[in-house]
Image (cartoon, rainbow, N blue to C red):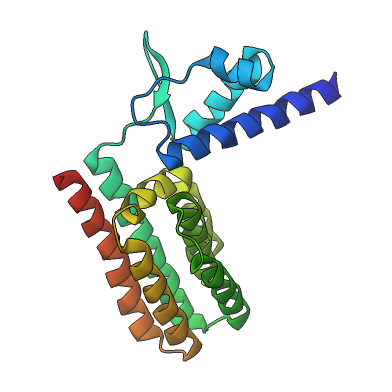
Length: 216
């Protein structure tokens, strides 16, 4: 019985990951209904693991349940999007302030540089968004603050989905790669003050890019 429960949990997580990827890639659009029996048939299972997967996604903020309609891909309001981005900016500002106080962790820097090398070879928006998130998570980890790291992690998939909208704009991936190179260079030279200014501009540009999306 316990083994069966573990298998069902693993399947639910796998289905949740699959639906998440569809949402981030734009294959499932905001407001689109998630049809349980379609996923159940695709995975050769009952609807129970699919319901659990949808429940997990609702906790993550990617899916919402609407009365008489069922589970749909969450459609964020402009205010929700700006709030998420502003919270992200605030947490990264706090992180860079901690780095300025405690010093640069060159082990984290090496990991950031390794992620950046991968980012340079990526043109797929979905994959780039995930690598970008990993890069910024390493910056947050460099702050040595578990509180900042925990709060940043809670932004989760909704933040990635919003960032993917920005990276979908022509030229934004190339711009992002260049600015990440500059950031690593400044941190390597322990020029934290200039790194902080660059990070502020970098994050503000994401908000400007989203503004352009809404203006279209």
